[in-house]
Image (tube, rainbow, N blue to C red; front, top):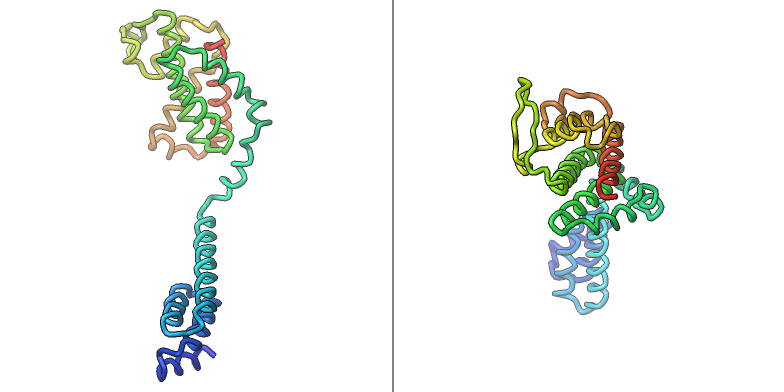
Length: 239
């Protein structure tokens, strides 16, 4: 039928019926672009415009659905399943709402930033974005330790360099490893958080591509450690 319609159109290129019927064949084959072109000609030359316009509308809808389906194929399967983990139950289990209410009591200078990192951390953890969880854990921990030190009026901190020499650094110039080294050396949290050093090392490994490329291990356990540790420290500081 396809060949016959094409031959007929060579004789009568303005046959709206042939244009319409050939368009339907192309649509069924999945060639929506060609089908639309033929249907537009059928509407242009034909008298049964309502029929052809309905076929045009149907073709456009089918093509849109096909393009949508093709986009959905590009979405990783893990995303589809992980998004289901963002539920009221799971948020309650990790203490999301209680922590959020405590963050709301932090001074305005830090509140917005800590709340942002906390929300991003929870989201990425629940949807199993493991690397993002590790990186944001470090970012959140750096922020809350800076907040803690400033609250305690520790605006200059002393840390040992790689050679063991003591050096002073202004609080805002410190990075995560500086803050952790200082907190651990002063036992500011007692012995409650001995894993802070591990969290720092994991964080550093995953913000440097070369170190990450060398590692072949599953990062899910590391993401779990970073998430749990950063939340425990956050709760300790804002309680």
